[in-house]
Amino acid sequence: MKLFMFIVAIATLIVGFSACERISHITQPTTPETEDKSGEISIGVVLPLTGHLATAGGLMKHGLELALNEINAQPTATKFKFIIEDDTSTEQGAVDAFNKLIHTDGVSVILGPASSSATKVAFPVAQENRVVAISPTSGERGLSAIGDFVFRIPLTTDVVVPKGIEVTYAKLGYQRVATMYDEIDGFSTDRDAALQEAFTARGIEVLATESFRSGDTDFSAQLTRIKALEPDAIFVSALPPEKPGILIQARQLGISVPFIVSSLTDVEVEAAGAAAEGAITFIGWLSTDDTPGNQAFVQNYNMTYGMTPNVFATASYTSVYILAEAIKNAQATDAISIRDALANISNLDTVFGKFSFNADGDAIYEQKALIVKDGMLQPFE
Image (tube, rainbow, N blue to C red; front, side, top):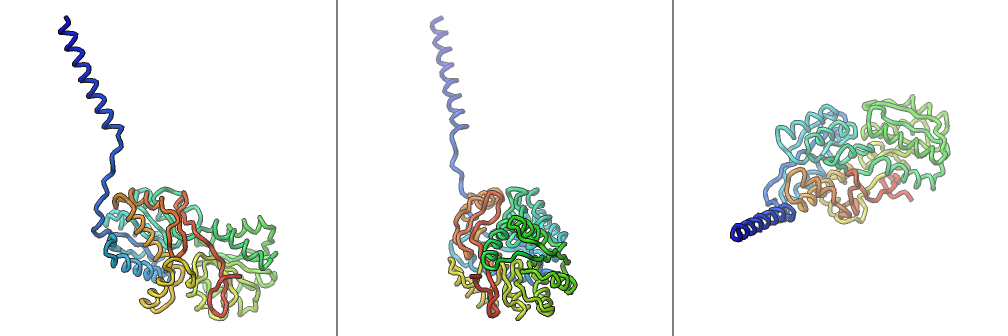
């Protein structure tokens, strides 16, 4: 009996030690192995290279390719390869491009789309398929909140508009205003809604809200109605192709009050000529900014393409460097690892200044107001 009890006790101890060892294996954290990222990574790119927004898409492509060449020239950096798809400046084109890049090319990351309208329908495709998407230029609020795989580089309307109104109202003191917006573009309609909210909050009277559609070239009827009301300022929310025409026709009608225009760039200023003088915009970048790497970027872009970059090219350039930083910090190059690394980006030095993502995947950096003086965008002071 004593021998039997001794054997049972020994067996119990052996089982106990085995159980403890199994629990230890389960509860002890393991150190993740970092993937070798020395190879080439394919990055999907979706841009409007034809159609209504082709000019902006071409400039964005310049910014992306300049960053790609710079990063690939670094001896220690992970090499990138772009697979570029044209969304034809349409929402369906963006969805088709995302599906092709995800299901045929098997990419983990897509840079694009450009417009808010395209981003609104393409981001859900990325989120559903658990692929990272980064839009360099879509500013409509709420688009990144659909899920944790989608991010954006521009400041959104709910950030830009209240701050811009605060800065310009303090100096111009407008009390009676009018607005114009593109009724079929997501960013333009959202920006006008944000303006209406800001005006209500400050007790600013909106005399008229006029709409137009992407592709329109005659804005004289809307501008004539606005002129008759004699507003103190006119706010325009539009895509790049329509902005110069609105400014030119307004001046031809003798409207001299300040125009405050969404995301006005040097390209539109040049196209509008003298009609752009005095126009104001809310934006996050200026070619003369003394931010990290900005002057080198402007110089390299000018040498490569023979022109000064605009904010669309700059945002695209910056998006590649932000992605490169995330991949450098990620444990691997799968979409989940890149997503997590992007979400953790905080106070990164970029040509926009210190850059971070908020909890929704939208950008945080310093905003500024600019005014056209002597044919050039300059700080609004």
